[in-house]
Length: 58
Image: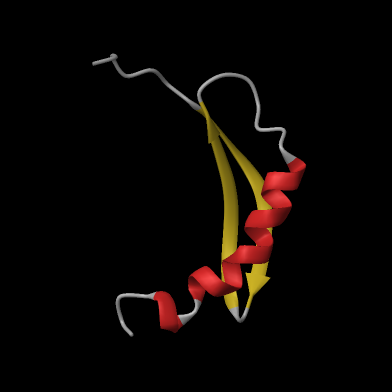
């Protein structure tokens, strides 16, 4: 087991998706999070992830 090490938390911005206000952060072990294609794909997937059809409330 590895001991705890601090990680860099970086605020990326605000999003509003299907009336959900969101704050977006990245958390990285080393360096910075520089993956624009991954980040864009996450933004495309968020409406589905936030829909009630996919939550524990459905």
